[in-house]
Amino acid sequence: QQQVKQSPQSLIVQKGGISIINCAYENTAFDYFPWYQQFPGKGPALLIAIRPDVSEKKEGRFTISFNKSAKQFSLHIMDSQPGDSATYFCAASPVNFGNEKLTFGTGTRLTIIP
Amino acid sequence: DTAVSQTPKYLVTQMGNDKSIKCEQNLGHDTMYWYKQDSKKFLKIMFSYNNKELIINETVPNRFSPKSPDKAHLNLHINSLELGDSAVYFCASSQDQGFGYEQYFGPGTRLTVT
Image 1 (spheres, rainbow over the protein chains, first blue to last red):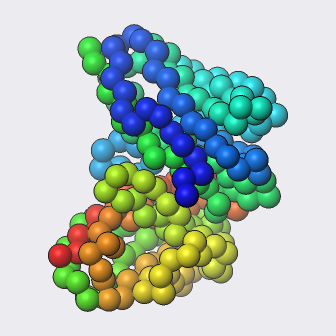
Image 2: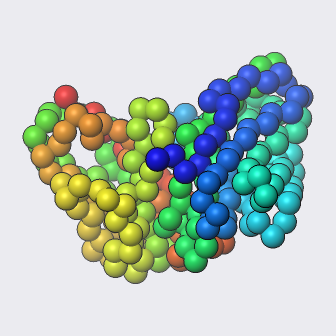
């Protein structure tokens, strides 16, 4: 049972464009929503995370938008660069737990073309 | 300085064999994890350890046995390897359990069972 659904599976964006990756969840107990970035041959690395008490969090060119009522959250990458080409995973964790109960989405392979 | 290291990086073995993967972190973290990433890039937590104590076992077969000799090490031993065990295994660590503690992933061990 996939508790966090991620789309699209792959995404191609031109340099300078906006990359948008979406995730939806069903478990209303989820309370922590991180995004991870993974380059080929490397382990995932935390990119940005949000709690549901805010609707948006921005760090540099990366923004998480969160819609609690729709149980959806998304990652926006502004001014996308070739160095952003990687696989991105959304994740969610239930209240009273942290990393030890993280459920990951299926990943989005992002390619930024010059 | 490598924060989370794993050995070996690649492991090719036959069905029925027993193998181990070692993980070490030099970050002084209390919590360590094992993840499995399958061929479709789906990332799923297997075990969580805090201060050498098992805190999460996500319905992993008994053939998988983690061992934490000290807080800096979490090894994974797999008995009677099966074809379905082929995957990339990631070790990770965080300062503590719970929210707000970033996970640091190792580079992964690609296990191929033939």
